[in-house]
Length: 406
Figure 1 (cartoon, helix red, strand yellow):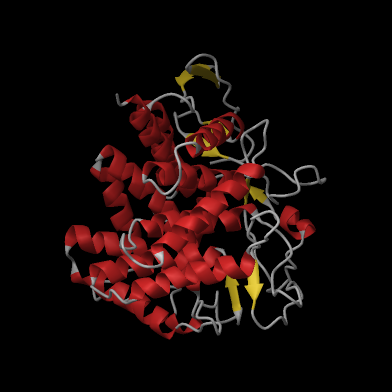
Figure 2: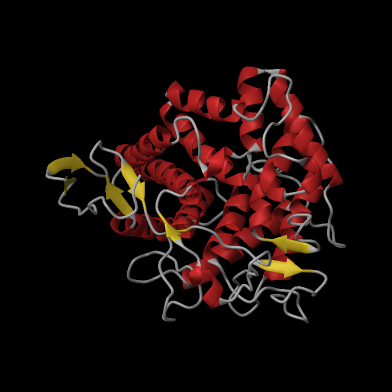
């Protein structure tokens, strides 16, 4: 999986010229087979590269989790057991026979990023009934019971980032938290799950644009935090992508008559409106820093674009968003296929222009400015882009099917 040594895909009807060979390629506006084919080709490339070790140094944390979440959707869409077997193999490298989580996981670090792969643990428990997955999920649930919170009740992002909530953290914890509550009959948890979204949106939303700032510091001690609001200074694309995906995935689980569900739906629709306004009119994509398209150094970024397409398409399919937003998803997906996909000699694909990292604080200190976000390296086939690309491709295949129904 290389960054710059593969030839870019150029559409000519429904084929491309790549390395002297004609190879099939999907168009964004075509049907199920083509969008799903791209997801399968991305899965093939990544599964080959990460056949044993990887991604992300093979740690039990969110990069592994979001990548496997993409593989899971390809499995669900195709029914091919090789994808399930691959997920199980990857998770079993970390979940031991006695249910303990080996390697890097340490509950007392209270790192919200490490919860995310628990979604795959729960899926494996439901599919296999193997008690080791229940034990591992219980460990992650124990972390959430003990996890430090800001005064309003939101989870800290990490113990090393005290008094802080980041948009990222909602994707890392809430879908697992809600699914665990549903599976093991903790009905009172749904109120806490919903409240986490509401708190973060209230503390991070810009009332002029409707966009969400990346982070919130309750203590106001961080150099990146506004002394009045506690907000970080920029609208980072992938941070909003994490939040948008988190809320549409969690709405699948929150009971339909829960008193806070309507509030979550309103937040989802507000985000959809805000992101439509900053979608690039030419490409259909979104920028690394969302509200500064013309500022020198900004670039169209692929992981956020895939996350937004996934969230719009799924939101429409599940009824969380009005049908008009499918057009936004289509425009975004067309831009993804035209700008971010390159072919490989063996028929796979690479996914390019992924912001490799984005955070706040730490060492060296990340101040959350525009200059910071554009300074981080740009990668190919980073799991934070590969997973969402498979996810949005599967969703677009479903969208094509629904449009064909009489």
